[in-house]
Structures are given as structure tokens and as C-alpha cells.
Length: 115
Image (cartoon, rainbow, N blue to C red; front, side, top):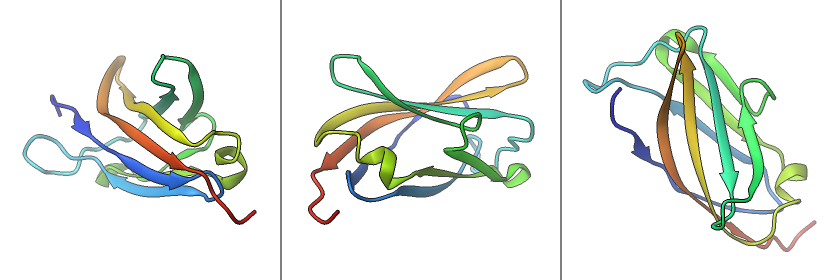
């Protein structure tokens, strides 16, 4: 995996943000992430950090490391702390002493209506 990808999300601030992913190498084969850490930062357009999801804080869970499978899960209670708007994010993979960017993108967050 040498290039990074573009991943854009749309969600509301009254719902869970949940999504599963499979990391692959340049040939499309699953990337073994055994022993790796994943960290996703979300920030405002001005660079103010507002949220982190990671394997360390449990918001990212590696579900099948040899197959490169992981889940992102940010609960509605955390999403409710964010205002409607557009945010930017990236995902970093930490493995064997190196840190690599996996993706970059936007989170477009709508104002939820129902509590």
C-alpha cells in the first residue's frame, strides 16, 4: 500500500457513525494488519482537532487482522457533540515502526432532528 485513498462520509449528529473496511495492497490483496494500530483524526476546516477514533480508544476495532478488516464505530452520544458542517479527516496505520496515511476525506455532518 503506497498510495492513499479518498473516503467521504455523510452522517447526522444524532446517529452512530458505523462503517466496516478492508485494507488491501496495491494488487488488491488483503493487507495483514496483525499487531497494527489505526488512528483517525477529525478536524475543522481551520485545523482544530475535534475527535479521534483509534484502536487505542476502541472506536476502531480490528475484526480480522489477516484479512485487513476493521470497523469504525463512533456512538451517537459522541456524534451529538459535533455541530452540523463539513469536517476533514485522515486515517493512519501504525505498523512495524512506520506510520502511513491510509486515507483522507471529508465528514459532512447534518443536524439531526429526532433525539
